[in-house]
Length: 241
Image (tube, rainbow, N blue to C red):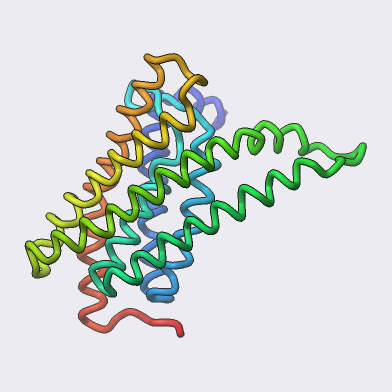
């Protein structure tokens, strides 16, 4: 009965999207509160790996076609903005390189796993092939888009931090840097990963929906970067060495 009601609920995807949003932001803040800068460095590979698996799933959201993974991936921009605000450009760039390395390692290891001959009792090989045989193209698109957009985000955040210093303007530099960077990321990734797989109309919908969802996430993450800044100023962050 319960599963029937869930399947019949018209706005299930939208509800789950907001739940995932809250879980994602909540986890980031817990990582930061109790592990400090190390927690942010740890979250980057988690976000990149999960996002590159979730992005393979296409869903209907708010009446448009979208790929999953937008929330988790968009959170990486919040991470680099917190690092830029509280620790500086050097640590923000380090987080970008950590994510880049994590994605390369995951792609290599998962594709090597596909070459192992499965036993007669194996039940996962077909699913793994479906998910990870496309991974090199996804990974190339993600790596290219990730590096360009994230390094732009770090540069842009610090550029606007110099132009509009002070904690009252965190919202401005956070949104100006993130929203432009996410547009760059969306265009590069979508064309590399999905051009030729989806027809033009669907590809355009994915670009628009992906950027729109990332834009919403960027706007909604603003209170969390203020909270992170407040915790840092009041020495409430437990920094792990």
